[in-house]
Length: 250
Figure (tube, rainbow, N blue to C red):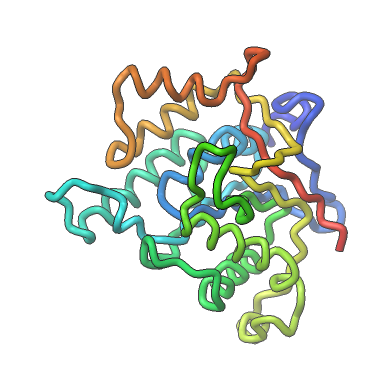
């Protein structure tokens, strides 16, 4: 058992599973590429891990196109990025990292991706799921929301509701012994209208260290570190990860 959520999160904190009724302290973080989970949810992942939750990272694509370095072959880049993701997650206390190996840059929110995520949800039985917000094409008038991010977010939302819940969706999972599952809370990063803030002021440096564990993707100089500190800092001085939170009604 770790520290309580109130101790780590303060007044604005995620919901608590009803363990007496079989709900588990598990969170699934579904990201499009190696590094996306750390950019979007490293802080909350570290806090949940400290609270004794089992946090699993699920990475949809192989990251095979994420470099302009001509010395990289796709195969070398895939191996490097997978190891970077495992190393970054370990810094946060996340030791469970899985990869779906869809081709980077070609992801679609079709049945193959949906079924893979539904299978993970049914097998892992998470209380909460974190992923990309699939709605914005442009985030805060500043960033284009990568097509793989949108596809991952949309497939994950559809997996959470209704696909993982309903027995007649992907019946081959049931035949294989996997039960249906109702996710209780959904959190979307990259939202234009967030409604839930996680104060990561005390662990911002840990989040930055997780990003620095992806040297194929991010520079490691002081300018980048300063930029990241500024990126998450709010006018009141706090550093926040911001999400659109949906407490599932059905």
